[in-house]
Length: 453
Image (cartoon, rainbow, N blue to C red):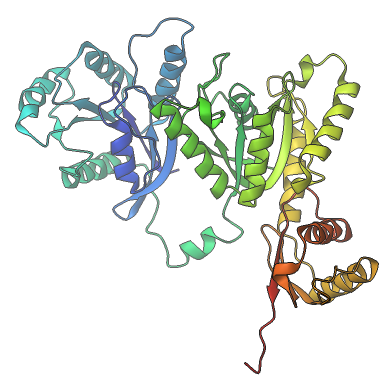
């Protein structure tokens, strides 16, 4: 297992900035507002030529029993337990606070190797805080600036020395074929869990992972970052993304929520399968339909998970109503699987994952060109395109250049004049003829080039 490093400290000292700098990518959300990070975020990265696992944690103020902060603290303590090295970071410009001393006690009590980092040391204002940090009992602080990259040479050397002392293998230098392996069969399948706030997304992720990996509770909007977690389902490696709840754009005003929504949308674009979690007690609100349409526009494979089904009294009647409404309101993903689940009890999870894999196979499906042109000839024979200004529209040839999602091209004599209703007729025909439910279908109409021009 890779050498694991946990970054801890009070709010707004620069933990997520340091995390992004060490990863070499902007993975964690960063803002001046304290307390933006809530769940712990893991990432595999390379420091020098060796592989490491980094954990970004929440900054904690005073904790009251039963509060969100207490659940955040449990996540931080879990990160410390799993770490081989602790990077304890303080803000040298503001000096040592009582909460810094509490974190120092937590680091010392863990018995783990710890490095004390005095961040924001890019100016003279940090001198007093730097010397004050000696009193935390964690040795000499290492001066750096996570934002500007100052002091990172010394930090990398200190991390390498700690790894050598621990004896934990940090991985090996990547081979030239590593990129090829990553995009092949060994790369994990990416699944994003999305939905409105308080629909049960984080509870579903915890149920699939079999541990309390995400902070959950009755409060809406607990998740902020899009957190990726690796697990294996039926011998298939999967990277599962828990995302922030998506509210209507008019209701999103705070900068922290805007950052969270942007992160969730980014997770949708990078995912291959999207599971839309719908609250069974408030099903198919306008925002649910908007999110589903967004997923279809991005060309992702979609599965609908109707959560909190254990709280529905008349399940048969509700199920019939849901199926009817979804067929009517989401024609762009006709036949999308609708799986009733209870993330709290674990009901329906096997069926949910089986449906996700089935939709993934459809999303990757390719159709032979000969079969497509036979379908096109039959479709035109059944329903001929209308004539425009006395000129008949001729559909000459059809092919599939891409899958993921299934994408088709028709070469046509007058592409600009082909009615959208006829295009929908062809898309529905493709969906029925070649068994392509639940996935968006792209159909492009182009004019064939004249070889004599």
